[in-house]
Image (cartoon, rainbow, N blue to C red; front, side):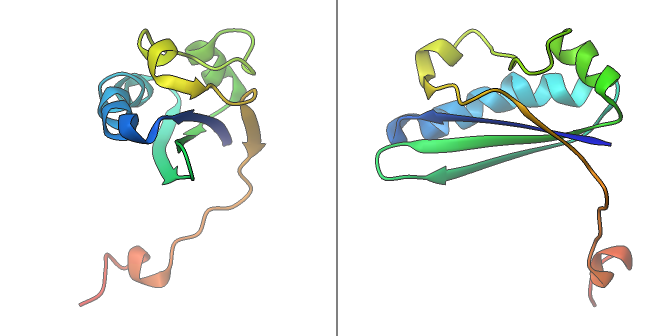
Length: 112
């Protein structure tokens, strides 16, 4: 399994708008991609902006290529990204996922 990580920043005033926009664009597209196992969207407020981080898990590099194209180091952007993003972040990062563990409560289906 491969983890794909992208970061970008928006104005603090645009953070809710960008989150809603990503739910309608990126999150939906990732969800529908063959070979995508999970999409996690994170955000944090910084002094003068808000940083978003997409962490996606994929079956293979080939699955990522089907989504992103031959150059998997390039991010996939959507029409309003140019208007909303202050910084599109550095190139995409990829990591091999070696292990994923859940706490015992999650494996049992939660606590009583």
